Figure 1 (cartoon, rainbow, N blue to C red):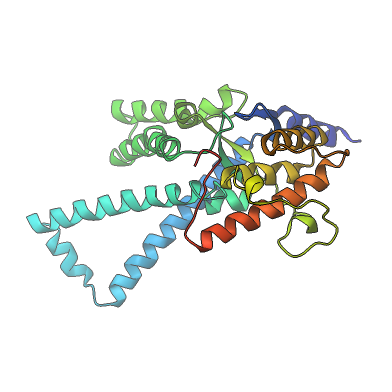
Figure 2 (cartoon, rainbow, N blue to C red):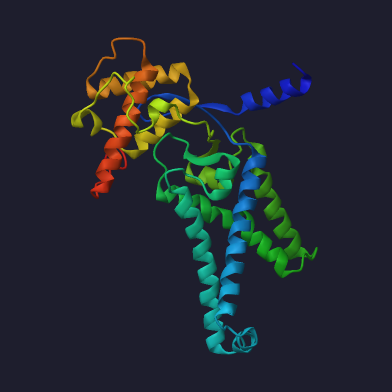
Length: 294
């Protein structure tokens, strides 16, 4: 093994963590690197920027006269329209991050391209309050100081210097803690972790699989919801034998079963497929179970 390979493995090992779920299960994961987080944010901002450009081009295409808009901006009505436009930009940006980070993948398109996602540090379900808090803090960390710097034309005066120091403190914040947490993560109780894209095994698909030896009824499948399904998928993707054993034992205790053999993976893949089919069947009839507390 070369020194470079050894250094890469060492850095990767430093980011490995064990997430303790509310059920007391230790799930292995890896904290996302600072570089991947920064690049994901840049990609998301580019997507938003080009989205705004497309909207403006579309408005021009349907007959919006830019000269008349410039003249209108000098009137009280134009000022109101300007405020509405700024608010629309603000809420569309927040809507973008809220919509994707509260989704099943917990990741914006930029994060998905980099193979990372947002997760709650306590192992519980990611809540709306957490996502709102971490995104509101992004304004305090980045956008407000950048706004002051742009407003002063990057002038090195007192305001510009203070804004630069403000921005530098928050940009360097992830380098001052082992989990690469932003200030927004610290406030919201979240962190960003790697989400490997490994394909699930055939036994985890919804297609009929005659190798499965476990069958579950309504009583066993009704105890869990979408959140637990996502956690189980993560465990199966990771493939850690200790985690597979712990999760299998926890599920068996919950549903009153005993696997009888050391075949935790077969049991969990069968339970995953059955639970997923059960939840999707319920959603077709307007019934949604977000987690075991629903």
